[in-house]
Amino acid sequence: MVDDPSSAGRRAGAFRRHAPRPYARARVVLFPHGGGSASYYRTWAAAAPWDIEFLAVQYPGREDRYAEPVPADIQGIATALAEELPDDGPPLPTVLFGHSMGAVVAYECARRLSAAGEPPRRLVVSGHPAPVLTRPGRVHLGTDEELVEELRRTEATHRDILDNAALVQAFLPVIRGDYRLSETYRPAPGDRLKTPVTVVYGDRDPEIHAWEAEGWREVTGEPCEFHTFEGGHFYLEEHRDAVVELLTAQARAASDASAAPWLSAP
Picture 1 (tube, one colour):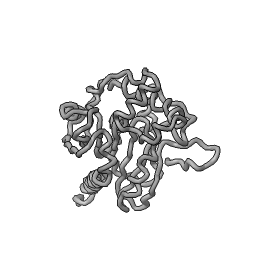
Picture 2 (cartoon, rainbow, N blue to C red; picture 1 turned 90 degrees about the vertical axis):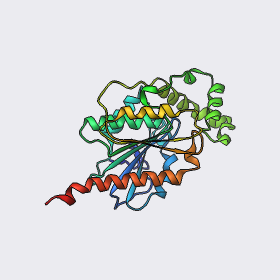
Picture 3 (cartoon, rainbow, N blue to C red; picture 1 turned 60 degrees about the vertical axis):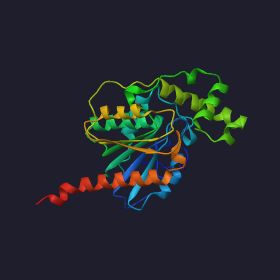
Picture 4 (tube, rainbow, N blue to C red; picture 1 turned 30 degrees about the vertical axis):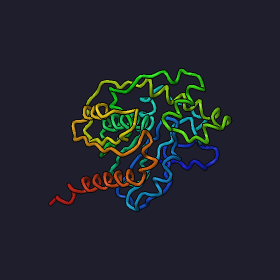
């Protein structure tokens, strides 16, 4: 179920329904980037149309889950999320979307949902190489100054925050932990998904090249399509409306496909 994070004395769950859509016919689950949180997607949820609900993931260790320990690896996060995916209403066709670190969390979550017999209708991954091409790194082992410099390079954090020493010290542990999760991630062998995949990225993103995007074809036995936007790693900032429109179209297509067998039944 979706917990109400405002309820005192109760552990906040992993999913945030920023803008409820009581008549939704499909939903999009949004996985944040490294260092990100569910609040990043608040405006996305508000921009969603009446028939599609956007549900944002809140990883442990941040915002209202600050006191909760972060699992040791990406697989641990995905396992917990797959088990907690809301079931407090009628079953809805589900699209998973993740950006940067969120792309591999969404992928690992899709693997677990598929193994449980409840595969998502589509997986949309953004700004991250294919899982087997994940770039190793040592940013998480660097000094605080080196970590901040990396955040400036990728434009992952607003400069007004990076220039505020108190704020930097408050959120750097979460950032460092997410870099560790990303840089040490390695996918385990397993079956290919039976879910279509959409790959989205910025045409000037240094974190993913075209050949690394192409590698996503190998994770699924279903069609894999590609969309590029003008911009860098956080092209999402400039093209939010277009990405929301893309996800809405994917979710509606998933809903139509789910209804098709019933419509054709005698």
